Length: 246
Image (cartoon, rainbow, N blue to C red; front, side, top):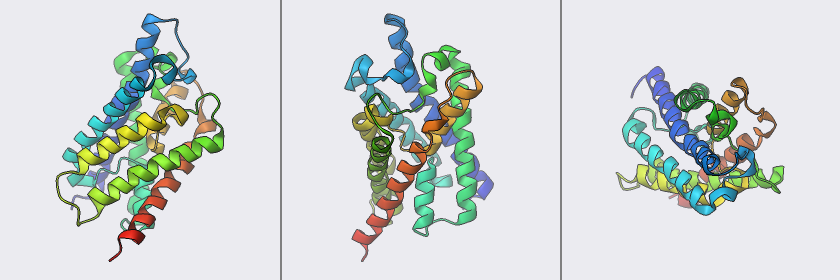
């Protein structure tokens, strides 16, 4: 097994790539729309610009980069890339507490770097128009509804992770494909509710960089993207263990 420092580097790089390409796709969707229409504040809603097709495109961007990272870095760190996943594995006694803290810090740092790199690549429009792909509840969605949507989406994602990556009985070779497509599907279906983060780090990076680079201060929404994903992931891991116990 690789050293903890090496695994944390892999987690950081993997999460940076997830945010750069996944959250970046959300930001780019808004920027492209602003090029053909009057500029639209990013918190109005991606679905109002191009409908479900926009969310499908964003979901597939996440799916592809997640599959790439799982197949390339999964053998190094397990490719959690998500504090909710790491916490769920801790709760089900598959991960140690000290390593959990290190992984989560690496994931948050990686997400912030990924968001910063997207800004450096694209420029200030990534912040002022695209919001760096930050996730917020959409108009008409309450705090509790947003938490529920994040919990349900992460529950399904974590079920897939348990079934094809964690469970040693799973056939080899399918983890990246299945987990990536599951994430893409959950984003497509639940994106227009609360942005379909399903990952505290994925939201943390754009929130931090938006604030530091002169964009919106969105931290009031951050508990949604901690509580929902962590509850969903933990429930899924515990449920999977119960129903598949031999």
